[in-house]
Image (tube, rainbow, N blue to C red; front, side, top):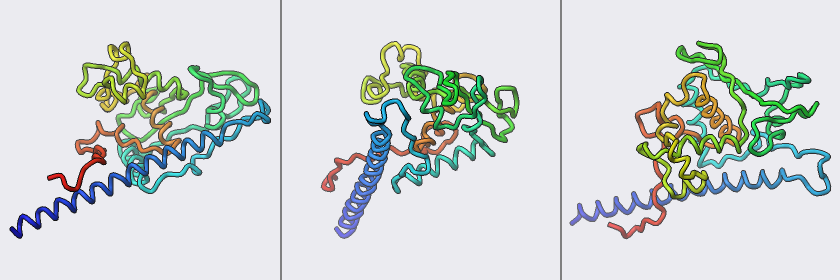
Length: 259
């Protein structure tokens, strides 16, 4: 009887701890969502300003990361640099091909328009496709000009990147395709995407990001976007590790009276 009582207390204590941790993590995601929404709202131009000037983007260092998510973000950076020793992502060296003005990341982002690969130079208003470079000390690294050279990637706008990701992860033939549920709805995956996509498994496979092709460009654009907004990206590295990097969130409707 005493043994059964101790086991019951242990089960209740475990469930109580699980619920508490899951609520903290969910609150962290909600806080991050609110932070990004607030940033978007603050950056909307006023009617009075008109087209005279564009609002400045919130600097990366000013983006608030909830304490609950910071360990996941730090681990994302650590594991990425473990996979790619000496990693350097250069986002500040691209220059306008017409006037040679060097554009910052903010300049590039502000010059984007929906569903367009190009940005606008703030100096001469010339439109061109921006790029960033990625390099590391990995012996097997292959860049745009061969072994150990920098990989030059087109810097894709969110609209273009989302369109590319839709096509990639829509496949039905993989173990974890995007079903006609929440993920498909959020990403806008349609039947045509499902027919030609490679699924989530394909995106997480380390071979997807190897080399210097379009897949590598898309993958590094996802990394750049997540790092810009300080969002954890552990799951993107899962294919390189045997251990489960991201555990599913516990259900929040667990009753402490459940047996």
